[in-house]
Length: 581
Picture 1 (cartoon, helix red, strand yellow):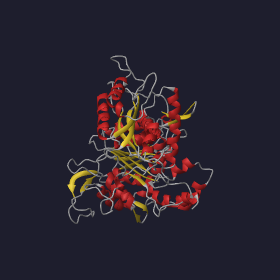
Picture 2: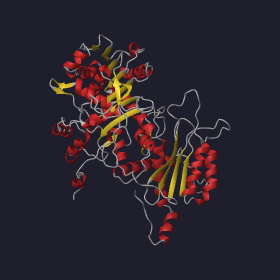
Picture 3: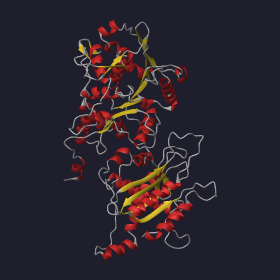
Picture 4: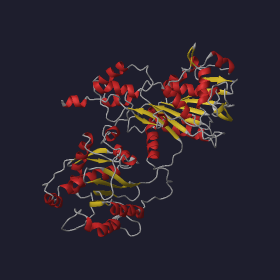
């Protein structure tokens, strides 16, 4: 088989990458549904009062119906919504606007708030018995928000044809171009694109944020999002919510969509508190390629139930050499592609095997530590000698919600405890630690020097490769990357690591923060080639765990090519092993 044929081999069914409860399945293979949700009433009401066009009642696709059930899920004890705000991320043309418009119509005049009653058997709506019934909001105020009038128009123009004649008559709907009223002005839908200052102080009951991948600093997108969040938070009943619709954003633009995705991933990584963010996305898998063999099955997977999308037309656009590959991946594969100077794209990292691979007690491994005092992250990553598998033992960085007025320091005792635990459980053959540049306020020494010295004293005799083996400054663990020779060694490791990822010659534990740090890393040229760094010096997007991962793989190769390892393998009758991975 030629290499091109191998490249174009596709599985019979391309499985998309998914986020959100909408895509979770039970043991029987069926999609899971929430136990208690106002969504059943939403499905029944929209079918009764909304229409696709005259004579055709509103009907959700199965995917849209599941989204509706999950978005309106309630806590059965408190009778409050599970989600405070949400994001739906899909490929271009998926039908996000009609879905958002239908929920906006439900919030406008439908039974969108829990009434405290439940459906009985044989109820008029056909709602499953025991599920909650809703009640109309007495003063609904729905906003369709965007940073330009064109963006709101795509949703607002749907309403005149969406409300059925019955809905218009029963709810006394007055259809306007920018404001729609009902019940003699007690309820309204309005388009908002004004300045954040003009929006401050409102009390909307539901806000639809359209195309948040375009909301950036230059068009006051972040200020708009902040005002909307504050206005919704102070709603009288505490039930006002916001929903963002977005395509895959372009990394590095610092859009509202980008910040929201990063917040969601931070929750998933356990770094910050879950505050009720509903995030639902259907994306191409990491291994999907922009080749003729891959495009069609991948698009079928990513479009979900949006069968109205013309696969052949999209395929032609992707194959058109005038369209950049990164744009095709964002628009049609719904993948968040890397910035131009990015080290690795998230989907490239995800394509490396990372499920079901675990360390075993007693495994031989190497450790790389990157220290910081407060601003950057501190990390510890191990690499197993037998197969090069990466495992994250710990990462310590300032929590995203930590108050600016309160100093934060990396908890050194906690880190020291993790190091102790690793040495008690596994067999580290080498341990390199870069202490970083931060200084201890108490004694004027570098923040980590004392601990690194202590690790060398406690574990140095067990290590087969020393950080500084002989001569001036001999040390078993200290590996200060400020040294030019070490910078050159690490630069070579950066390139090797990159090729290993692209060639799928690397496995990792799927750690969420490590994934974030790899995605944050940017290429930075130096005298020997290129290394990695943050997007800029003051950036809050950390890369330290990526440094640890690269360092751990580098250290494994150093051990494998050392005299100590050569003598051991020769004694076993295997000769010297030079590891290329």
